[in-house]
Length: 399
Image 1 (cartoon, one colour):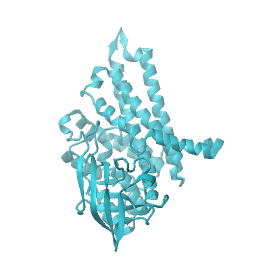
Image 2 (tube, one colour):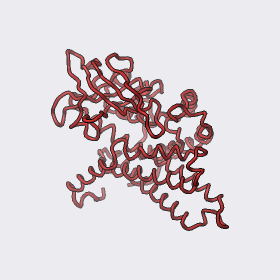
Image 3 (cartoon, one colour):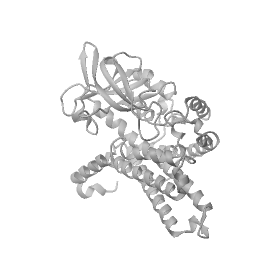
Image 4 (cartoon, helix red, strand yellow):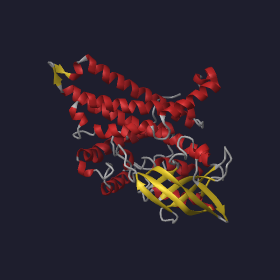
């Protein structure tokens, strides 16, 4: 395994750093630049999209055949991490969830006609997208294959959708949707993925669910499907391959979450580091106190552990493996390290860190979701235990 970063990835990181310092991070200092969901205001975002496009900082995740940069996953790690240094960074470069994961999926499995209709508008920043999976109890959560209740019934050359979904990220702002629904009772091939447009009749948003933390544009919504018709041509992959589509998307999406969270973790420690170098107490700077050094050193260690696990998972994806075990390891560790880094920074800044005078309180509320989204940490630990039971000592094998 090679730990060096390619020259082109290093150059993109440098350009992203410069772009954030000049155009994006200054916007974080004024809450007037925040929209209702505590993300960047829409008109400012559109301006930054234009600047990022002009700077060539776009389409990192796309293959070259679709107009992207053809980067390996191990090259995306430092690029996404760099973008994650700003709370607004990923969305400025069109690599934020849920669009980023949907771009990865559609670029890999959609037909050429579907890519032209559904993918390219997302790629160009013309529309936003969402993936529609999670349901209220007793419907699907961590076990969609076994518990999904939303149904798709084939009538002629159309599928009729009935069901109830919630916590659909970006639902209010999205125009293109990827929907998972049950098409049979087959325990392994019972789900199918579909594509639909916001303007289609037969569904509606019941509410935008209030949440604890800042949210992506479009919030987290509860949706009702009461007869949505989807042409069979807008079925994604084959009938019964819905879980396959989900695993293709989520494996990558979980890892890109980790990449962005690492950038945010480092930013929190940067803020804390500057503070303890300047703030004095009991005759010395805070940085000279051994207890402070322990806190920062421990948080820095957790971040680096998360980076190594993330890079290893990306390496496995580049080799063509599913890397389910490696992605789960990274997801658990980086979710924890993000919370620890931000919590440490707030503790060291004291009341200032808890206030809205810094972005740390924003980051803290955002960080709490990391142990839940795209699979709770406990579910990923179950995955690791299953691999351990199956592989024994080979769980840790090299190569």
